[in-house]
Image (spheres, rainbow over the protein chains, first blue to last red):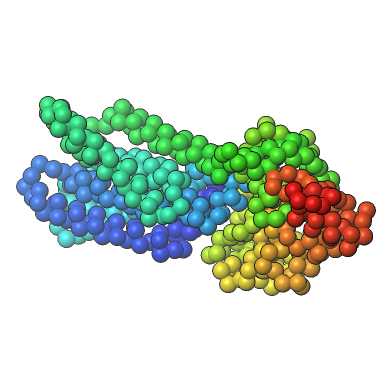
Length: 247
Length: 241
């Protein structure tokens, strides 16, 4: 077993056996389900398809779930001093980073997949007339973009977690980095260049969900998510290496 | 065999270690003693690859810590001063996890865990959650973790702190028994007790080596006085530094 597998297994077991693993997922499912129902209710008679409504309802909550799941990954190790023991084992930093990252991503994907219960199981049960409007392939594409977004948010959260000893600060930091800072930056840019509003979506991430759910799959968007995820994990492993030598 | 050549390390402008040179052969137990702030922990962390020296090198069996860090780290067992552990795991789970993350083969894991549990007399606590253990037992779990992979060099930062006398004696027995296959380097303050079973003493004073003594070359009382003198004044012949 490689250090990556051992780290992944340990983290998944920790999530599975602790309140800190279950509670965020349960809360995520509750708010995502509620948002889905409310959005569906509001768009009654509108043009949005059910998989799009599901994607748009779930997407804003994913960064919050990822931030909470990743906040303890390295911050806890630093606070307890376990980071010394972790860094003295004969393994590369990137194996430790990937192991922890994949564990958080596993839990997030479980959460996102479980949220499909509302549109695919509960909705046809309560509203049988809508059963014909459910398209599995379209749902699969929506699920794919949500997983891609999750992978990026988990990478951001893992990276931020290395910088902190305090888990709450790590969570706040990754929430800011995932949503707050990009939105604030975009708002400032729009003040200076209002004409951009005509060419760009206010919420590019929601637009990506909309595009994928309606079949507009872009390899450019896919590449952006993959590259940004890789970049965050690369930075994370380099910071960890610097932490080893500079602590 | 651990060879340390001319290691220098600074925290910013403050030189924490200067021109540290020594070696430790298998079968030796080298005690690093010094007052608080003398540089013992910094030296241990440097040798455990948790800090990088400004100059000089540390070599274990011809493997340099800078050029082949992973191979170097596979040859050391490091016990940190605070001895952190995963509280939610049982002793057995923790040792198994640590062995696996160190890259030990699956087939050997169980045997090695059983071996160190017996060696460190932790057998009866194998299924106990670590959070329920006393400080002394936690240290023993940390020590067991260090011993699992049969490393060439053991780096133990203050392993006896917080232990009562019987526990210290047990640790001394364990370290003496494993010193046949490993070089042991331990930092500590308990000079009187260390004199009973360590083979050499390295005295640090303000980041510099001020004494290196082989225990068998001295009467214990004489050596004790000599070390205490060096700890206080930083040199052999007394007087103010």
